[in-house]
Length: 317
Length: 295
Image 1 (cartoon, chains in turn yellow, green):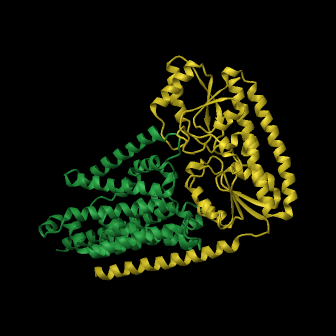
Image 2 (cartoon, rainbow over the protein chains, first blue to last red):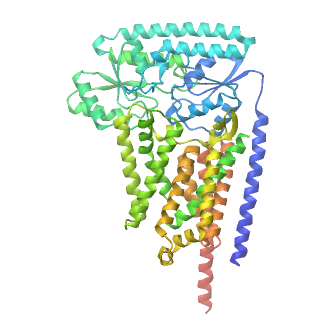
Image 3 (cartoon, one colour):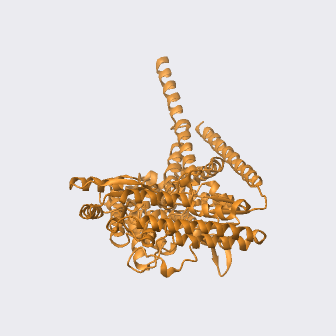
């Protein structure tokens, strides 16, 4: 009796297996047949900031999609099934490079054999990049987008790539890129002027995640972070007490939290300084690894940088 | 083609994990996969310190080494009388902590978490190809996992009787002159090899899930080791297929859907297994009480 039952269980399992296999084949055919092809270049970008550049330069002549949405930390990003399709169907893939995309970067390098896969940071001279430690092992800080002048170089890479692969529209891309780079230069100027208006001894940015190294270097503001470069690495208790002492000794008025990092890490430091009789306030929320919601001002690169500058200036001035 | 490679990789991982998982569940050491997923951290930090790069191969080497150390220590503690679950817990938390300390001492500014440098993602297997002198040989994961599966099949095939006896009655095995400890270490070595190569190819959650869940499902369905191993591997493969289908429909994480499918099959077996299922047991109880009433 039991053996009979066992056989029927086995048969049932096999039936499910065949059904599932059939379902997969049907759905796979279904999705590949559905993909719209209107002759435009298909461009897929990893982080939102690059997606935004492509939208601004490519206009309506390219179909641009991004993988990491608002608030997604690139270090912790997980691909969904749809993301594979986006990567597979793309004519061009843009990514940041410099290990920002983690292990996905290795995959992107392999994809170079099949299609145009371009790290937008490729034209920034390596000698001008910041190393993340003193060991000289060639590990660069990947968060280049907060130095607007460096991000202009990324815009140029995108313009060249688009124009090279879609020569019919090359003039269109060149024109749009020139116009957008003009706006970036204004933004760069705005950042310089605004941050210079903070008294020099107060130009210290304390934040939860070391994403602002290039920002600090470009606009003359000292940056101190609680965590290391990675949002996933643990921070030591010495970090907390060092930072607390620093806040108290230098009479720092405000520290900043970030959209893609939990508030908790910085709150420990604030507690500590309060106990030593110095009140530090939270200056506001900065965007670091990801932009704001799509459709809002902060959901664009220019809007995000402007938001950060305004928040910093308001709190420290 | 993408679908084919993902399904093939999933099937290979499910087979490797399913076969070994059956033994682990019987020995009450199912959590060893989770343990290895954490304890390889010092291995990758040391590999990074020596090689100075985050190259996959160096990371894989470091992780394999620590995987072996982990299973060796767990087995050693267990044989010296520490409870199986306690020895797993002691070894992996301690090694993981060593890894955290090493990161904070040596590599704190470098992005060196397991997710970034070791764990692969099944979604990308299709593109992560292996090429030799310019010839594209197909996904690296398929080669790595295929080789692992062959080794597992060869070792278990050669010594099946010994492994079986050691799993159920180590005392009798020892009395018969089988080097029990050696076979335990051999099995653990296989587990370490399978999990580390699977981590590199498809990521942690899928490996840990497929190591435990299908084997536990199979355990509910049969009382025979041979059948349990076959069922465990088969259910694992089935989970990856159903999970992939779900990931396509829902546009969600593939590994996540696969483990959910495995869990779903476990629940089905738990309820409806002909012998150990809830429904069958309730029916049996009722029949029994009716017989007693009749008597």
